Structures are given as structure tokens and as C-alpha cells.
Length: 580
Ligand code: ATP
Ligand code: MG
Image 1 (cartoon, helix red, strand yellow):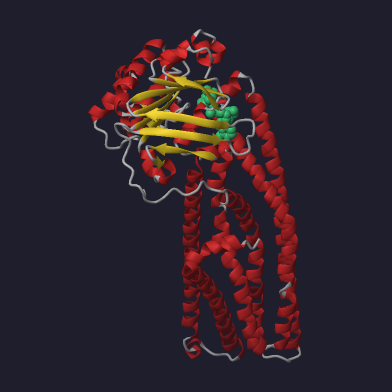
Image 2 (image 1 turned 60 degrees about the vertical axis):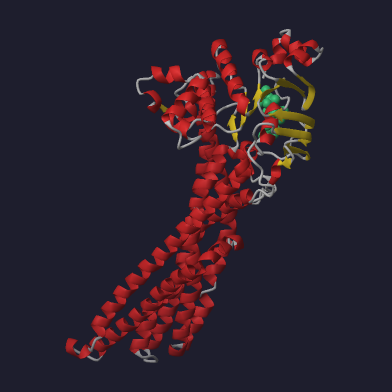
């Protein structure tokens, strides 16, 4: 429960954290003062029969203490909440940066719903830990100690009762907390599963409907919800039982003090004013400890969430890319070549597939096509070029410079990329396009749309380029979404253009148009395209044929056609081989 690593997050805010605890303590100290004034007031009025005019400034002082107490409470809450907000947003930022650095190869292997749940709800639930539990932990130590220091000189016996009873509360709290811990862990993990599942269902609604699985999935969700409900009820039960136990302990302890004081008052062994003071203050002694018990469970959820956050933050990262370009590499230009030299790569945890001895040469001014059966490693080569993955052995060079000595941001600025499943965001077509280059002019947008064949479609829309497309392009046809993604890549006008099956959703005419505009653009670029159709591949200047992670053939289309082998088979029309 006392997570050192969570605590270390407050280190950067030590001053403010201390301030928040100080205000909390001040509130406690003012409560003691208030009790003192009250005891004195009652003593003066009832026992010494003083009138209002004889009370000196007692009443206004009591009032002032009450007001100050409210101010202290407010400031304590305020600073604690500010602190918690800052820690959480800092942590969320770190998490997102980490996920970004880990890249799509990591994120793709995780459940999106679960990650977003960790980043949002999980970190949110740390609020209770930082704004309530931690300050309370400090208060539950400092306030009772302050009270003890005051009470011991006044009345030894009460001091002893306090010292003997106080540890019972944390003791029981820890006992119950131990049991609650496993439950909250289960509660958190079942909420994660629920989120992840819900996300999957939302994303795959079409698939589920078509396969008639939506009912089944709804059942699964309600099953997980049930589990979640059950474990939540158990957690609540523990919480209630523990607060019952703590209340009971606190009340009993207060009662012991009351009896012990009452008896001595009765036999005139004690003055009224200190006795009354101690009576008022006794509940305040146990109050912070009881509060701690209540906040313990809220804080617990945060600790569970943190475990998952640390797990992500501790993922090993690809080696950092240099901050500054040591060789001050120039952007690819006429004569530039990207070489993949003897590159080996396998996905972590996936033994069945490896890229082996990949030697590929990508020249400026040329269209290079990668072809091969599905799963042969074409997109994986793009992952390497995009530096989402690092070769295990071998090297990728831009002319003479290893690309991993170029800062990754700079490297990616040189690349325009259309993935196999392009991502579009909720927003207008224009917003989706400007993603590539926020400063693009209308003319540039028009050219990009022209080249990708999107223009006629935009012109046919009543709202034109301002038309809203749904999330992931859900309001567009597959071909339209693909053309939009192409236009976006063209708009970026980067010297390296990577197209992963750019024409898979286009009709033959559009495909031919696209091929010719890509060829046109390739005069001033390094263009690599993964081709699923023989026609597109044949239009390239150079072709690499991949087979099970290896380059099995390469050459110009004419050379390859003449050669017996995989490519000749593709051309002669064995559609099963041409899939991609
Ligand atoms: P397609 O033509 O179907 O797009 P491809 O040639 O692009 O196929 P890749 O995407 O490169 O194939 O995948 C090559 C192999 O690597 C496949 O066996 C695939 O299952 C595996 N693979 C791809 N991405 C990952 C990943 N993120 N983690 C683990 N394995 C992966
Ligand atoms: Mg692919």
C-alpha cells in the first residue's frame, strides 16, 4: 500500500506536498485550540458565573479560530488537489510518451481498450491516493502525536489510554487491508478486461453483426460486468466492515476516556476545565486514524492502477536515437540510395517468422516494388524503414550514414507513408489532409488530391473538402479512405514515399492513374511500394520478391518475367500466389 515509487512522484513537488500536509496539520491544531477555548468558555460561564462583558476576547477568538480552521481545511484540500492534478497529468504524459517511443509494434501487441483504460481511468484513480490517502497518512501520524504531547502534561492517565488504544486502529486496518488488497487487484483487472472487451466490440461491430456474434459478445460483456459487480460488492463489503470495525474501535476508545474522566470528575479528582477539554478532544484524537481507514480503500485502486502504469513504463525501449545528427545528413536527393544490408529481424515473442539476410537497394528517382505472398515480410520491411522496429543484425544506410545515427524525428520528416490500413481521424477531409502539412496551400491540397484521384469525389460532395469523415474513415468507402490517405501522404511531399498496397481498394482505372502519378512523383523521390497486383508491380523500376522473410528474386520487371521463379508464377496468373 505504501508504494515507494508512487511516493517518489511527489518528490518533484516536495514543497507543495509539505505545504498541503502543514495546512492539514494546522487544521488539526486549530481544532485543539478551539476545544481549549470552548472548555474555557463553558468553565467561565457555568462554573465561575462570568457575564459576557467579563469574558474578555474569548468569544471573538473562538470565532476567529473557527474561521481559520475552515481556511486551513480549504487550503489543505486545494493544495492536495492541485498536486494530484499535476502528478497525474505528468504521469499520463510520461505514459503517452513512453507508448509513443515504444511505437506501433508494441502498442499493436497490446489491447487498445486496456491501454486507454490505464492511461485514463487508471491514472485518474491515483487522485484518491495523492489528494486523500497520502496527506491523510501524514495527518494520522502528526495530529495524534500533537494531541498526545498536549494531553500528557494535563492528564497522564488519558495519555496512557490514548497510547494503548491508538495502535489498535492501524493494526486492524492493516489486517483488513491485506484481505482487501487481493480483492481490489481483482476488481481492477476485471475492469480492465471489461474496458478492453467493450472497445473491441465497438471497433468490430460490423464483423460481429455479420458473423452473428453480437449477441454472444453482449453476453460476454454482461458476464464480465457480472464478475466486476461481484468483486466490487466484495470490495464494498470489506470497506464497510472495516469502517464499522474502525468506528467501533474509535467509539469504544473514546468511551473509555469518557468513563475514566467522568469517574474522576465525580470524585473530584480532576478540575472541570482540563477534563472537559480532554473530553472534547478525545474524538479528534481518533478521527485522523478513522479517516485513514476510509481513504485506504480509495487509495488502493490507485496503487493497483499504478502497477500497470509501471509495467508499461518499464518496457525496454529501442536504443535512443541521437539528439543531433552527428553527420548532419542531408535529406535524400538526386543520387541518394537507401541500403538494407544483411538485415535480420524477428518480432519479439514470435519465433515462426524472421526476416533473414535482407539486401535491398532503394534508389532516388525510382519506384521499387516489394511483392510476395501474404505474411512474407513486406510490411515488416516498412516497419524497419520507419524505425518502428530495429534490425537485430545488419544495417540500414542512407548513402553512407546508418539511419539510426539520424535523429528519428528528422528521419520521419523525410518519409511519407500510407499504411496498409490507413488511419483517418474524426474531422473534415481538409483537417485529415492538413495533418500532413498544416501550412499547405489550397493549390497544394488540390494537386495532392488530383494525384491520388480523390478530387472528383471531393467535388461531388455538397460540402466538398469540409465534409466530416467518421472515426477511422467510417463514413467513406474503402477506396475513398485509401485515396484520402494517399492524398495526405502526397501532401507531405517528403523525399521518401512508402506505400503499403496503395491500390488494393481501387478499381483498375484508378489504379492505373495512381501508378502513373506515383511514377511521375518518383522522379524526385525514393518510392517504395508494396504491390499486390502484378500490374502495379510491373510498372515499377525494380522489384524485390519476398518469400518467407527472404528476398528470393530481384531485378527489373522484364528480367524477372524472363526468369523462372515466384515472380513468373505471379505473372502467369496464379491468383493464390498474388494475394497480399
Ligand atoms: P501482407 O501481404 O498480408 O500484408 P506482409 O508481407 O506485409 O503480408 P508482414 O506484415 O510483414 O507481412 O508480416 C510478416 C510476419 O510477421 C507475419 O507472419 C505476421 O504474422 C508477423 N507479424 C507482423 N506484425 C507483427 C507484430 N506486430 N508482432 C508479431 N508478429 C507480427
Ligand atoms: Mg503487409
